Length: 570
Image (cartoon, rainbow, N blue to C red):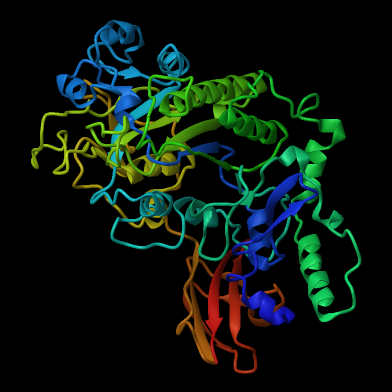
């Protein structure tokens, strides 16, 4: 295969999906080709140093056996075998009730909720009940896509909600700088997820174990032969070596002198060796304590597809009970670790699953795909509370969103994008316009018991009329109504075949630079380097002598810049 043909097999701009590789059997990750888009990502700095840890409970977690309405007669009848409503359970669960009168108990660690219950009592755990979306698909694959892309169930979106947000954090002089060695996001896994897919690139790196990273430059066990295949192998290796942009950083942090067990990245609490989720969160804590500027971490915890032998109450067997034990234990230890490290003011976490489970148990001691389910947010900055109404299992009423849906499943009280919107606005400081752009412009006006972004994305506290934010001290956002001092508009036409017009507006006259760069960051034209007047300005760009491809026009005013992408097609 020729080099040009090889590159054609990659998604847009080689960094778009990266090349998977394994080095020395120790490190599995993604090698990113060196491109302007990636250079911009590496230089990106967010307006806040807040960190979000996302845990995907893959398979569809059974919410009714997680936050348990143990005294509800309908629950007891529907779950005679796998439920917690049998004789003696109410007395057993009563000490672990999360709100007096709510008769809901946590089932996240023997004895039935100790770890999460203590976090809830300390105000570090928020439980948002009955979260889902309209027209639930009940499909693992489509459901995951919907949650990861923040799309409606009838719309296919190719980018992830977090990827779209992180793209907005690319510096204004994109794509010309390459300063920061840290990825914007890290998936503790062999590959990334669509949640981080941006329009031009994947906005995350995948790392199984950053403490065992071996630089890709070491991936040269022999000299390729001087054959066609050998030439192509040498080419692939050169890409791996040149694109190993995170290698030195990981090596510096997790080298011999900074061993996670004994060095500066070490944990402050002991993590169990038999808890896979705890092992993953331990690595996230290493990265945070090591000084990485990464803002989002992603972890997948599988096993929640419990059609058969759900075992919610038995932690000695594979099933939901063991998973809940590991979930509560791992998050509680991670929270203690982060607090001991001194980062508790800047780290929160969130769990989500593609759907809940049916109310009625099936004939295999399990539950089948359902609809709404609870979400958890945790951390010191979280406004720990129980939000939303208790599950109402008494039939279907289309005029009452608290009852079951027409299929007998829990109805959604909240759209999952309301929780995403709260995180974007309250934790990362996104303004309302940015929030709407990232979440495909949902306004949530048809969903009751919720105040929109103009009122702080507030949720109802269970059992009261009180409304409050999910984050205790929300990050201030930039007002979307504040006029910009200058604006660079999209060129017209775009795509263009040879000549296109570039327009911009200035609030005040002054020295202005307007330049065009190719996809490698090379300057191809200077349209203006001098004075520009207040108001609208237009310049013609002639690309008839240039090759087809992606170009970038950059406007610089008083040291600040804006960039637009242009597409030349011949």
